[in-house]
Length: 124
Image (tube, rainbow, N blue to C red; front, side, top):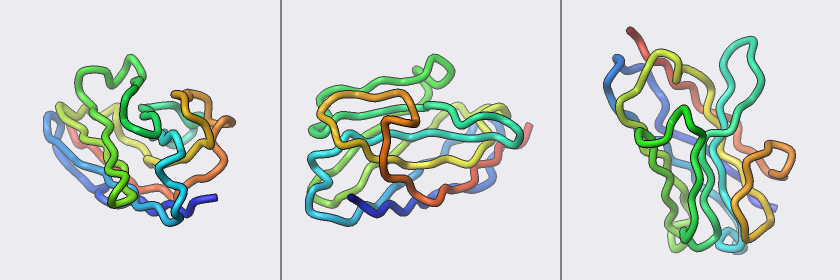
Protein backbone atom coordinates (compact mmCIF):
# COMPACT_ATOMS: atom_id res chain seq x y z
CA UNK A 1 0.00 0.00 0.00
CA UNK A 2 1.15 3.53 -0.78
CA UNK A 3 -0.13 6.87 0.42
CA UNK A 4 -0.48 9.47 -2.31
CA UNK A 5 -0.66 13.26 -2.11
CA UNK A 6 -1.31 15.40 -5.19
CA UNK A 7 -0.32 19.03 -5.64
CA UNK A 8 -0.04 21.61 -8.38
CA UNK A 9 -3.64 22.24 -9.28
CA UNK A 10 -5.01 25.70 -9.86
CA UNK A 11 -6.75 28.11 -12.18
CA UNK A 12 -5.27 28.89 -15.59
CA UNK A 13 -6.51 30.30 -18.87
CA UNK A 14 -7.16 28.13 -21.89
CA UNK A 15 -3.95 27.46 -23.75
CA UNK A 16 -1.91 27.56 -20.59
CA UNK A 17 0.01 24.88 -18.74
CA UNK A 18 0.02 23.22 -15.35
CA UNK A 19 2.22 20.59 -13.80
CA UNK A 20 0.65 18.21 -11.30
CA UNK A 21 2.79 16.24 -8.90
CA UNK A 22 2.02 13.22 -6.78
CA UNK A 23 4.20 12.29 -3.82
CA UNK A 24 4.09 8.69 -2.67
CA UNK A 25 5.13 7.17 0.59
CA UNK A 26 6.39 3.62 0.91
CA UNK A 27 9.52 1.80 -0.19
CA UNK A 28 7.67 -0.22 -2.81
CA UNK A 29 6.71 2.76 -4.98
CA UNK A 30 8.97 1.62 -7.79
CA UNK A 31 6.99 -1.61 -8.14
CA UNK A 32 3.70 0.17 -8.88
CA UNK A 33 2.15 1.27 -12.13
CA UNK A 34 0.93 4.84 -11.60
CA UNK A 35 -2.00 6.58 -13.18
CA UNK A 36 -3.79 9.90 -13.35
CA UNK A 37 -7.57 10.12 -13.49
CA UNK A 38 -9.95 13.05 -13.44
CA UNK A 39 -13.53 13.68 -12.49
CA UNK A 40 -15.63 16.64 -13.55
CA UNK A 41 -18.82 17.59 -11.67
CA UNK A 42 -21.66 15.22 -12.46
CA UNK A 43 -19.42 12.93 -14.50
CA UNK A 44 -17.75 9.59 -13.99
CA UNK A 45 -14.09 9.39 -13.08
CA UNK A 46 -12.12 8.99 -16.29
CA UNK A 47 -8.67 7.73 -17.17
CA UNK A 48 -6.07 10.30 -18.21
CA UNK A 49 -2.63 8.68 -18.31
CA UNK A 50 -0.61 5.78 -16.94
CA UNK A 51 3.06 4.88 -16.62
CA UNK A 52 4.69 1.57 -15.77
CA UNK A 53 7.02 0.95 -12.84
CA UNK A 54 10.20 1.92 -14.69
CA UNK A 55 8.70 4.56 -16.95
CA UNK A 56 9.24 2.31 -19.92
CA UNK A 57 5.66 2.39 -21.09
CA UNK A 58 3.04 5.11 -21.02
CA UNK A 59 -0.50 5.35 -22.31
CA UNK A 60 -2.87 8.28 -22.66
CA UNK A 61 -6.54 8.93 -23.16
CA UNK A 62 -7.25 10.17 -26.67
CA UNK A 63 -8.57 13.43 -25.25
CA UNK A 64 -5.16 14.38 -23.81
CA UNK A 65 -2.75 12.67 -26.19
CA UNK A 66 -0.16 15.11 -27.48
CA UNK A 67 -0.96 17.67 -24.78
CA UNK A 68 -0.25 15.84 -21.51
CA UNK A 69 2.91 13.99 -20.47
CA UNK A 70 3.22 11.60 -17.55
CA UNK A 71 6.58 10.94 -15.94
CA UNK A 72 7.99 9.48 -12.73
CA UNK A 73 11.07 9.70 -10.56
CA UNK A 74 11.51 6.51 -8.54
CA UNK A 75 14.36 7.99 -6.53
CA UNK A 76 12.06 10.75 -5.29
CA UNK A 77 8.87 8.65 -5.15
CA UNK A 78 7.00 11.08 -7.36
CA UNK A 79 4.91 10.98 -10.49
CA UNK A 80 4.08 14.08 -12.51
CA UNK A 81 1.55 15.10 -15.13
CA UNK A 82 2.64 17.95 -17.38
CA UNK A 83 -0.45 19.50 -18.95
CA UNK A 84 -0.05 21.84 -21.91
CA UNK A 85 -2.50 23.51 -24.29
CA UNK A 86 -5.17 23.25 -21.64
CA UNK A 87 -8.82 23.49 -22.59
CA UNK A 88 -11.90 24.35 -20.53
CA UNK A 89 -13.02 20.73 -20.86
CA UNK A 90 -9.92 19.69 -18.90
CA UNK A 91 -11.50 21.22 -15.80
CA UNK A 92 -11.84 18.52 -13.16
CA UNK A 93 -10.46 17.14 -9.94
CA UNK A 94 -7.34 15.18 -10.84
CA UNK A 95 -6.41 12.06 -8.90
CA UNK A 96 -3.16 10.13 -8.68
CA UNK A 97 -3.49 6.37 -8.27
CA UNK A 98 -1.27 3.31 -7.80
CA UNK A 99 -1.75 -0.20 -9.13
CA UNK A 100 0.26 -3.22 -7.99
CA UNK A 101 1.21 -4.39 -11.45
CA UNK A 102 4.06 -4.04 -13.95
CA UNK A 103 1.74 -3.16 -16.84
CA UNK A 104 -0.21 -0.11 -17.89
CA UNK A 105 -3.75 0.03 -16.59
CA UNK A 106 -6.67 2.24 -17.70
CA UNK A 107 -9.58 1.17 -15.49
CA UNK A 108 -10.12 2.88 -12.16
CA UNK A 109 -11.02 -0.42 -10.48
CA UNK A 110 -7.55 -1.75 -11.27
CA UNK A 111 -5.99 0.84 -8.96
CA UNK A 112 -5.98 0.14 -5.24
CA UNK A 113 -4.55 3.34 -3.80
CA UNK A 114 -5.72 6.90 -4.46
CA UNK A 115 -4.80 10.41 -3.49
CA UNK A 116 -7.28 13.01 -2.30
CA UNK A 117 -7.30 14.90 -5.60
CA UNK A 118 -6.33 18.38 -6.74
CA UNK A 119 -8.63 20.83 -8.52
CA UNK A 120 -7.76 22.03 -12.01
CA UNK A 121 -9.86 24.82 -13.48
CA UNK A 122 -9.38 26.14 -17.00
CA UNK A 123 -11.05 29.42 -17.90
CA UNK A 124 -12.05 30.23 -21.47
